[in-house]
Amino acid sequence: MSVYVGNLSYQVTEDALTAVFAEYGSVKRVQIPTDRETGRVRGFAFVEMSSDTEETAAIEALDGAEWMGRDLKVNKAKPKESKGSFGGGNRGGYGGGGGNRGGRY
Image 1 (cartoon, rainbow, N blue to C red):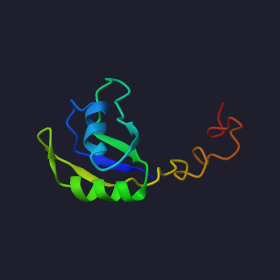
Image 2: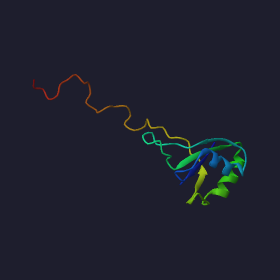
Image 3: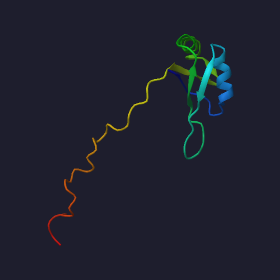
Image 4: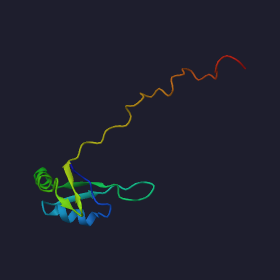
């Protein structure tokens, strides 16, 4: 499991975030998503630590704490939801697709 860190400064770096979370245990991985078009940090990150105990300690200490001029939002990350449930695979509902668009040609 990992920790979600929200309301981050757009100047945040992996090294800076690692240093903050390392005060509460061993940091295994830090992911800072960026915008595909601009390459700019999106304002949140995910931090994976070595144990649930370390994650809990970091959450309790850092949730609501001010860092880099922002009040952090820190909690357990939720599993990524599947995007495939919208629409059910039926693309438009016209049936066969045989080219009949009203009967006149």
